Image (cartoon, each protein chain N blue to C red):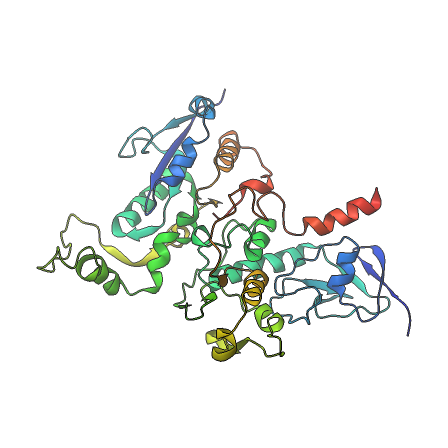
Length: 239
Length: 184
């Protein structure tokens, strides 16, 4: 097997490791491809479609597509920008995202993508679906209004014996995350905190923490757009 | 100097926080009054349109029949309408009631809520023709009339209001800095 493959991202030639996903190869080289459901090092789900790029003329999710020799990838174009903005807008109208009253506001990845793409207002009508809040777990509050069904909690939160604590239930528009009644009750504080941290939105909140502790102006996405840390890599490399 | 632009503002189903943020432009308000003349607005307390306006700023979503009426009047009298604040854009916190049937909301507010269950023994519900009718849900302004521009925020940052308003008044294009676009 070859040691590396050569791909082109936005006219820049890049050496990538065979089997590596496009999004990771791009990031290592200071090219930020926006993601929402994806987490580095975790098996991708490809559920949010934000990371869509153009590979040899076709739109594909860069978090689930491994690199291959000679791939020509385009991450910046009007078509892709419109596509990504549309995905954010659809996610915003599909749930009940009341940012002003959400503890995650300022540290929320969905919101940060909205800022980055300058979504001033979604172009689609708000759905205001009726969804409930589940406060039955002693460590976590689960708010279905804010959930974007990214499966991060399902994929990353396992107890010491390898049991999954989260799962999906129901189907179609009723699909929601659920906490295993038995394993969920015995969840450690560390695991509950990790679940809340991994949630890109405010759908999982850890009970042991006070909300709104970080003042406005000091939160993660207050001053710099999401992805700035990756784009800085590139600037350092060039200079 | 060009003719001064005429500005109107209103607060529909909002908390006046966006207007407070508007005042937060501080001393720039002195520059503003050189550039614009206020017409219908809580700022100068003109209650009815006396002129056709260039720009109308709308705070708050649409929760009752009076809001619908005022919003349509603004559309009629303003060349450009701007939704400013989350409530005008998506209904905001008043829209938290959108998933609850209206009957249940009224029941809780006047008959069964802990602060009213003892004091409203006769079970009186507000029902006077002077009172505006509640709508079945809180609507974003752009679902009622055409809105030209949107300034998000709860409230929109003073800098966002100033930069956008200044650009509108002076008819320039703007590139808004990242920090001013926020949903909270």
